[in-house]
Length: 227
Length: 244
Image (cartoon, rainbow over all chains, first blue to last red; front, side, top):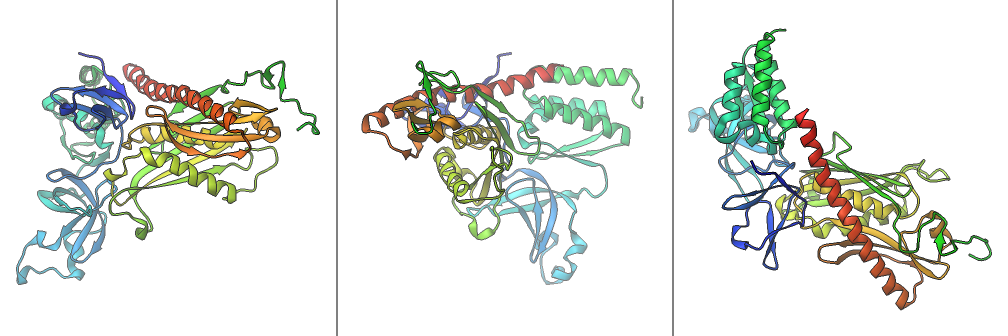
């Protein structure tokens, strides 16, 4: 495993302008870092930021919290500088299915947690959301919020980390792109999953993390789950 | 200066033992505040500055939003206990000006188009002050912005040069500032040698001014290295913590 190369904004990365990817910018025929982060050199030269705010992109699955009802939309906080909106037609179209302002809270109320997909983000950064089939989180399970920059680490290379987590913690775990994670299971299992997720988030950019998490989970099992 | 009887240079050394072209000792620490998105603590001699960055976040009030880019707000504030005589708390003419020039010193490096309609708030608090506080503040704010994950083209480094007893000197302390003849705070992008702030108080001859600027340039390059090192060390620290 190669060592991570940390860069700060303005650091020179390469002359190969056509490989410049996310987190870089080009100036005078050279590629420079645009973020404080780690350089990954695959086909693309990218700088993976160590921190930063989530910006919704089309197709992302996010977990939102209904923050406002503003006919004909529900406005959801999606852990981002931009809020998401859900149109009333999400609950059916046609005159007989028409939802009035007064009944909107029967469908989704303030504080409700929802799973949604980003349909579109327009030039004014208005974010249209569409609800997923099983969209309501309700009081089933728990919600953890980590930085969205840590999400790939919780998932792991081709899903290895999350697979291990789900098996060892015996929990349903759903990770949304905006850094919110929904855990469902019994209390002890959820506590363990929570602990491990926070551990991953804290140590996200260290090497050998998957092994360490595995060791941690094993030792936990040996000591007895409810100890 | 003569009538006060303060001799600022003795045997070619300044009162704090520095040569004319020496910086005060600098300490930079990243990530000192847990609740901020990015933060940095800087000591420049006896100056103690702490910078906190929040955002990008939703801009309020809404009519301040810019549909094309993020807006940066910068608040420079001196603690009442940061100076010998108690400073009356709250914004005043001086701190409003410093906030403005500091914001404009950082503005050119931030790639604001990435977060339209948002606000990036920078708060700089001075816990202890000994001349050159705005430069310490800018150095801290620049690192804090990077630590907050804000896309930037470069870091900004800042230092002041002045004139004491007729000689150009780098990075004046409070005594030198009070009894000296000139003070010129400078902020620049080290990589491209671009100046983003240049103020002057007092008088330089053209030659002195040029020498001063050259001195400031070299010093900014030194400071830049320290800023960069602080950010990179913060990261390696997280590796060590992770292994334990």
